[in-house]
Amino acid sequence: MKITVQFLGQARQLAESDRVTVEVPEGTSVDALLPGLTAEASERLLAVLVEDQKLHRSVIAILNDEAIDPSDQDLLQDGDELSLLPPMSGG
Image (cartoon, rainbow, N blue to C red; front, side):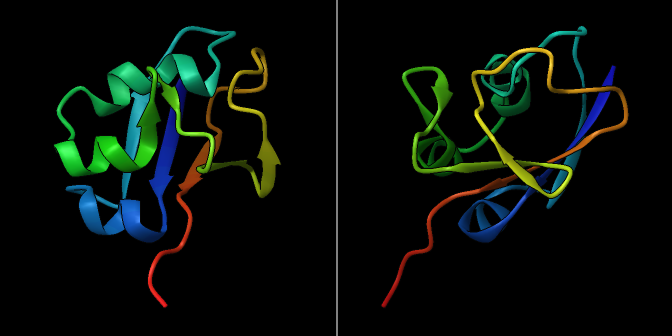
């Protein structure tokens, strides 16, 4: 199945593109798609998104306009749009 991943906030600034499409098997969780998504990502982007090979706990995963638990399986469906929003920084 194909999932479009949109980077928001700081991740958008650090990624080469603001959105990418990844192909994953059915039943894949957000955590499970990270290795393919970040295989060629910069160290700075990885530091913002990934912690212990999972989505960093401070990053909000938004699936079709609803926040989800990135470890839940069977939520992603072919054609879905997933947005990743790291916490805002600055002050």
